[in-house]
Length: 147
Image 1 (tube, one colour):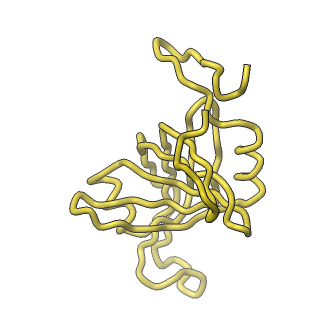
Image 2 (cartoon, rainbow, N blue to C red):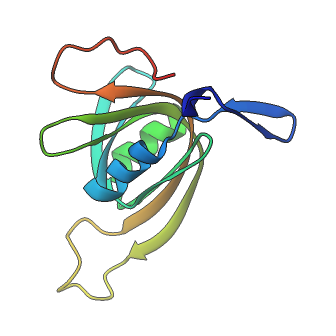
């Protein structure tokens, strides 16, 4: 069976395994991703960060120093799009929903010579349930989910 057609049973739910070794390998190689969020008024916001990890069958964990706008958007609207792409702009787009947001570190002025202005800065870990994976490219494409 092809990787995207295998079903994984977790508890009473069955999930399509959307995250292949190829997808995981690109994410590890690139090392960063972009997260698009939107508030309830339809205003989009784009954030970038490092620390993405992909887990089968449909989990993405992203840890970064997200700005207050991103976190406010996620509180109002947990739906996100996360893009991992190489230098040529080819990669994958993950569409899903943030199920858990946990603060993992805070910069609070303890070392002002090392910390950026606008404190406090908070590092967040987002746990995202992936609902679809699509190819991401600047070339002609269909936006159809893989698998």
